[in-house]
Image (tube, rainbow, N blue to C red):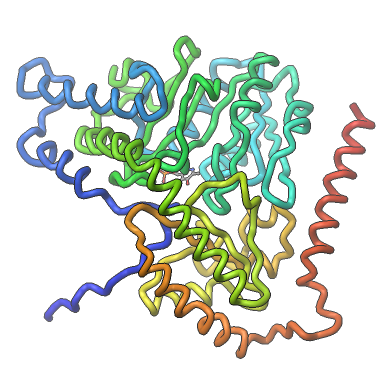
Length: 422
Ligand SMILES: *Cc1c(COP(=O)(O)O)cnc(C)c1O
């Protein structure tokens, strides 16, 4: 069978994964061909590889302004997140409480559920209707038995940012460890672990134009640490397992590129995102931006298309070669609305009609034109056949103002009862 010509793809799903940069492929290739030795071996053929691993460690450390000794290579962002929480609990055996938020990546959400089943106490902090966090509430939820606070730096669904430096300062003043999942941040915002003041920080290379299956955990100097994978003495005894050399080298090169493209991401890519978002909101009726407009990543737009299902939109876009995603990153076809949008108080129908467009350095003006040319027709087609009737007088499921008010009242009531019981 002859192969069909590869269809051109408009890739607007850079928060899910990213194209491997050609420079990164070049950097890693020798380690898949000639330089396949084990970096822990004593003879020169293996040991020469060790130097390349350490160079990559320096490059990744520079990306977050850390000391190379503070960088632990892991298999992915998920492992980094799990390792940080696990270490904090094991090294503080008297402490049984973890604080995180209701909008974390499933790496944290489901690890928290696991911890609860194992007898730990987990607080999932609620968020405001624009996706932001109430810092005073976070401070009040810290208890004498709190081991660690873990809040993501940037939300993968909405791009909304949490004030990590402020959160870390609160943690320090209370003697509690602080972790941040910063997987979405490299290349989009500058990261400086000293300015942030965190004890742990997670990254994943496939979100910054390197391959899947390699991540890192920053572990601040002198932090008591328990490895999650117990084995050999790799990573200074902090993570067993033979180093994934080719991927580590790739991560190092990608870290350099991410710093070099920071400016472009905040100018050209931001402008593409803004044009896409502003035009959709202006041209397609009954659309709403999800998440705070100002405190967010420059590449992400999350938009609710009322009266239609996101899964249907994505299917039609897929037919046009356009890759985007629904709020819920996980199970395609699942009717569960995104936990992030739900935590922001969106009514279920609006959450189910929300689509995330996440752009990157390889996207072009022409691609934005292409999406803007086709999207209005896609939405119109779906609305024409939608059983949901927007004109219906008692259809109040879509009253976002009422839903937002209700969410804010609920939060206020919860605050009230907390302060009464405090
Ligand atoms: C992608 C992502 C992860 C998971 O990283 P993996 O390397 O795929 O395990 C964790 N947190 C956030 C915010 C992410 O976007």
